[in-house]
Length: 90
Image (tube, rainbow, N blue to C red; front, side, top):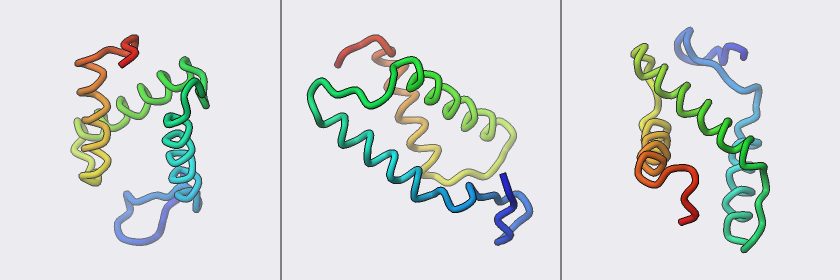
């Protein structure tokens, strides 16, 4: 991770990879709309989402300022998992 250089010293960037993240999200949404298509392995998806949620939770515990949209998206995923569990088909 490199310093973004804009704003405070705690800011960082993904080296211009924001478009990669947005494109990956669009790819997953499009694939989810196609019956029977699974674009990533279940094990990878579960571990990646777990890492993302854990990282958001740790940042909140440390008092690290996070964008509302990030916390909201993470909370939405966490609430869904707590309610339905990862093995629910619906």
